[in-house]
Amino acid sequence: FGPSDGVLVANDLRKEFGGLTAMDDLSFAVQEQEILGFIGPNGAGKSTTFNCVTGFYGPTGGNVWFKGEDVTGLESHEMVQKGMARTFQDFAPLSDRTVVRNVALSLAPDELLTLAGVSGETERLAEEICRRVGLGDQLEETPGELPHAGMLKLEIAKAIATNPDLMLVDEPFAGLSSGEVQELTEVLLSLRDNGMTLIVVDHNMRGLLNLIDRAFVIQFGAKIAEGPPDEITDDPKVQEAYLGG
Ligand code: ADP
Ligand code: MG
Image 1 (spheres, protein in one colour):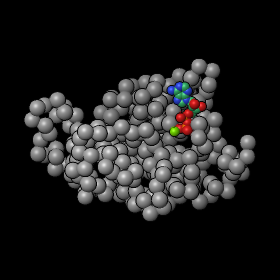
Image 2 (cartoon, protein in one colour):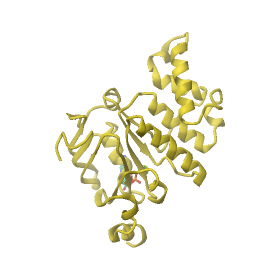
Image 3 (cartoon, protein in one colour):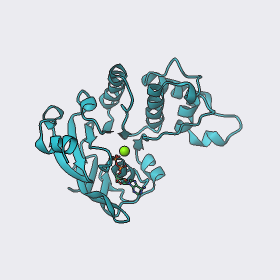
Image 4 (spheres, helix red, strand yellow):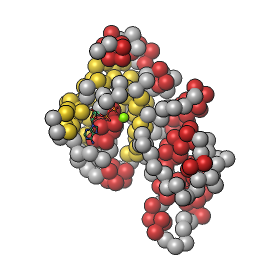
């Protein structure tokens, strides 16, 4: 793969932790306004890939191109400036701020430092983002008062607030009911319909089937299968990764 093969391109991306190879020369490309499902069993290297793509870890080898530019090894705040956002599996909102204030601070981090607090315009935009993810009725609650699904929505709202072209979403459906999965699926689809590109991680592919355009399945840090979501579950390598071994 090369720089112009997609909005995000990873080529031979590698990450070693001591003697453990978490990402084993992984290559993939994501096209504009595509939703790529990044699937694999626990420990497969999904979060490590997100960390290396978004600048939280430096890869041991390989390249990352974003919108045609080599961004390999840049810091996470530089990736955000370039239009990349991510959510965390273990998220940590500011527990003493309201939901809308948490989103406002992602919109305008500098305002965190001012005594006056966030501006009216920032507050208004933050409310709008909260409504987009279905948190319109919980603006003034603290994160701790939200149900689990609300925390996941808040994490997505904070990522939207950085105005990304690409959003990497780590296990958004963990612990959700099927109704909540459907609701969040619609939120993510609407982001895509408004021009965003998404990579969504899950260890369980069934939850992603109504969301993704393409599945990319990894195990032991390497690709084992790739294809349309309704076909990938029949792939023998995928079945073996999940049932055998
Ligand atoms: P997944 O998100 O697919 O469940 P991870 O990317 O979290 O998998 O982990 C892949 C492998 O890398 C695992 O064996 C994990 O223990 C290891 N690993 C992940 N992060 C670190 C780290 N910071 N230090 C050492 N090993 C790590
Ligand atoms: Mg993970």
